[in-house]
Image 1 (cartoon, rainbow, N blue to C red):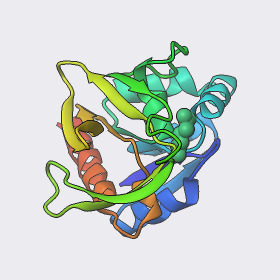
Image 2 (image 1 turned 135 degrees about the horizontal axis):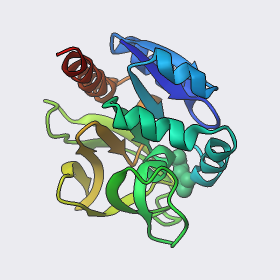
Image 3 (image 1 turned 45 degrees about the horizontal axis):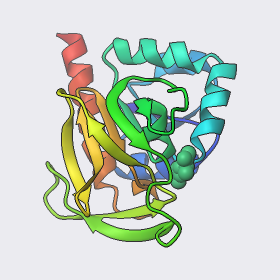
Length: 195
Ligand code: GLN
């Protein structure tokens, strides 16, 4: 499986390393044409307004919407989660607007800007290590959204069909089981496509 990491801004190299550790091939994606050669795409953490602007500038908004409509999985982490959301609580314009979630940016406040914790994830046996950096929260989810984990009763991991999102940075630890989970989603989608 070839999995791309959108390389406009943010934590790209770490995701590629985690994908490779999870048994797939990680590729840095800088041009829309490259989307044709991959089976799944990760939108990394960074700064969502900047990533959104660059996506508009380089034609990624429509290209990624088409990619998703074709059944290929997307995984958004931290800023990537914000980019995938249908609604941003501050009233900012949504970016891809693909996933039926409402999110709040920088939702943990100054005291807890950055921290590491362990999270129990539905579908993964033991808790995973998660690094939160000025992280967003999921405030509301639509009917088709499956909540995969919470932190202090707030939703931080969720899935809707071929879309997976995490508020935190799973790529900043050597625990790559959430990437493995995504690789499985990509494998399943590739199989369905062949049927
Ligand atoms: N605070 C950033 C935003 O709102 C996200 C932070 C991150 O990706 N680590 O876009």
